[in-house]
Length: 333
Image 1 (cartoon, rainbow, N blue to C red):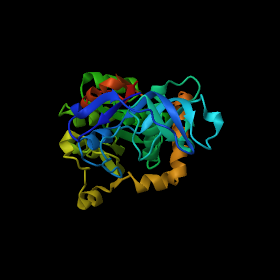
Image 2: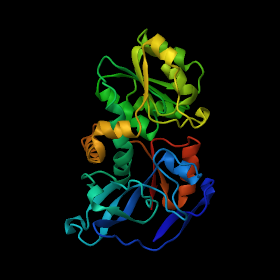
Image 3: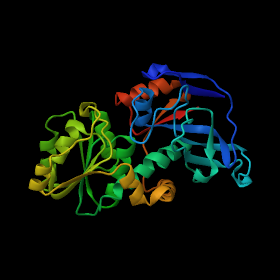
Image 4: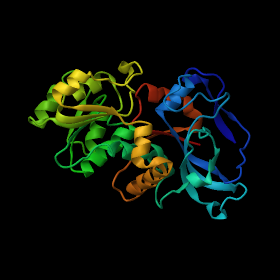
């Protein structure tokens, strides 16, 4: 097979598309002929040698990637034979190996790809879709809600826009540049604004006609998140699940306790243990993956996807790091 390997931590150019030995599934595992592999922002951090959250730096050389969809073509000892030949999608968890033509996964973590769903959409929903449901579990959205979503043209943001609209909320979607802003409007955002325009907060207030935001879904940090929090009214909630903004210096937006008290707003990080506990532990995370796939299969949400060939993994990383993509980034072998 061919795979993308990282032999030394550093820039995207360190990702090498090269021949590799075919992996063999162990007991309780399957091998998947990969049709699509997900690329996550954390992949770029690990490639740089900068571990994030629960992910430790892998021993080198490594094949990055933790989300794959494809067809089961081999079984390990003791694995249910019913999996053979089925189209499946899975999140590999802490073990990488997704940027390849063949990948090994635990059978217990597999989900059948719903009928009619493409592999790239399945990959977009299994990890990023699970995250969207986890984030939403901390927000009681209704027709009275006003949700502000920075990075609304990203893989996670695009899903949050659609889920918030489905709940009846008024959605303010932020994106960088006219083209991305138009994509956000097409997702159903009531107000779509370019966050590179310094006047966007004033435009948002004018468009809201005096209504205050009730929740900010903050996956970016930096100046955009700071300005978004300024739209919150009393009782509003700032939910942190990332800090991808180049201006955030790799740190989440931390609000001063005095400001929180004076404005009667709350701010909390929902990543890691809080989200795992809210979803119901590892089994609940699996259920969230299944629910995410079901939501897309039913047409309630549609992921945005930017596709690259597997051999173009370095270009995919560069594009993701420079915000040159829309939606979930996926590699196609």
